[in-house]
Structure formats: C-alpha cells, structure tokens
Length: 258
Ligand SMILES: Nc1nc2c(ncn2[C@@H]2O[C@H](COP(=O)(O)OP(=O)(O)OP(=O)(O)O)[C@@H](O)[C@H]2O)c(=O)[nH]1
Ligand SMILES: [Mg+2]
Image (cartoon, rainbow, N blue to C red; front, side):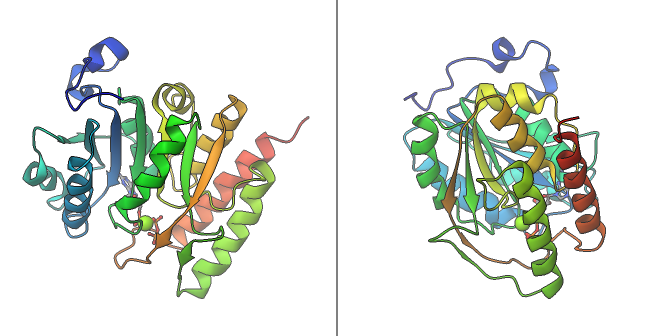
C-alpha cells in the first residue's frame, strides 16, 4: 500500500501525454466526466473528497469537461487541496465515453475509475471495490441489477430502453448484469492499454471498454449498489438511448465470428 505522498511523476509513466494533461501518480484517481454540471458537481466533489481524505492511501480527482458554458470548470478549485488534489482537464472529443477515456489514459494512478457528477452512487461503494481490485480484478463495477442492490427508475421509457440495452449487452458480456452504472474502477495499467484503442464516445462506451478488458484476459466483478435516480440527468432516452443502442449493436456485430 502506498502512502499519501505521490511517489512518481506521471511523466515517467506516460511520456507521450502532453505536460498540461499529466498528473502525479497516486494510488487511486477518480475521473468525473462533466458537461454543464455547476449545480450537481459541488455536492459530488465535496462528498468524494471528504471520503478520500479519510483514507490512508493517496488519491486525486479529475474533472473532464467538454466545453461547458456554465461554471463547471470553476467548481474543482473550491475543493482542491494538497491531500486530495482536484484537477480539471478538457476533452476535444464530445461525449461521456470520450471524456472518461481522456481521464483514464492521462492518469498515472495504480487504480483509476469514474463516477457521475450526479452522485447517484454513494462514494462509500468504493470501500467494497478497492479490496477486490487489490485482489487482482481488472475491473470492479457497481451494479443495479444484482442481489443486494437497490435502484428505482420512474420512467417507463428508461426502464424499457434499459431492459433492451441489457439484453444486447449480455450477448457480448454474458456474466455482467449492469454495464451502465456510472461507477466503475479498474487496474490502472491494464485499463490504460485497453482504453487507448476504444472508439465509442457516447454513453455505451462502458460496454466496449469491458469487452476489451475481458478479451485482454481481465476479470470483472460486480458489486451491489444503493443507487438513486437523481434529477438533472444529461441522458436523453430518445437522443442518447437510440445512439447507445446503435453503438452496442455495432459492438455485438463486430464480435460475431465471420
Ligand atoms: N465531459 C462530458 N461529460 C458528459 C457528457 N455527457 C454526459 N457527461 C457526464 O456524464 C455523467 C453521466 O451523466 P448523467 O447525466 O448522470 O446520465 P446517466 O448516468 O447516463 O443517466 P442517469 O441514469 O439519468 O443518471 C455526468 O457527470 C455528465 O455530466 C459529455 O459529452 N462530455
Ligand atoms: Mg448518472
């Protein structure tokens, strides 16, 4: 287990990453993709930093912004501190997937993961995840569809779309119940090598990332989550739902042997 003091500079781990994106290596780094999240982000960063600061290992948070037109990029500076730095970087490609990927590939952390700005998954879920990563899992992901989880979704369209999406995702990830919960953590070196080749920029990126990790020999564990449906979602069931369905269909078709 490492101490709180960052031990290596990211420059050593990622010589190809521009210096403005490099961050010191820590034990665990949390990526928060964010677009126009000035309302939801403060509470999420506050809870995240408070939890991380109480842990014995080194950590950091990085917000990956995509041209927000509100004060999203100013939020991190209010929570930045020497124990758990809160960085902000941009991403030239749009989409949650592109932003998470940017955060992952520029990280030098031993373990790296992401959570949503909506704070839908309690940060305490990390306490169940980290021991599994230390035990050798390549990915440990929160799931709303396994025993022990709690999740309520009001919209019939979201429930129906979610069910269809899960059926499709199961054809390529048969053992995973929930590919879409926005709280996933990974072995840093492995996910960086895999994420560099990912192409899905939208909300279905998780499926591609998990498929590539599994193909690289990584094992994936799911942990139950107490998930809350938060107001202010950036996900539009019609716009993003259709795009996500098309993306997952492409992933499924690409994995059919020819
Ligand atoms: N940087 C960036 N972040 C994005 C983009 N689209 C969505 N996000 C972020 O991705 C996270 C997930 O979005 P949510 O609005 O929680 O949507 P969701 O989790 O898919 O759907 P819910 O089930 O309603 O929570 C949030 O932190 C968003 O700000 C984007 O294009 N760029
Ligand atoms: Mg969310």
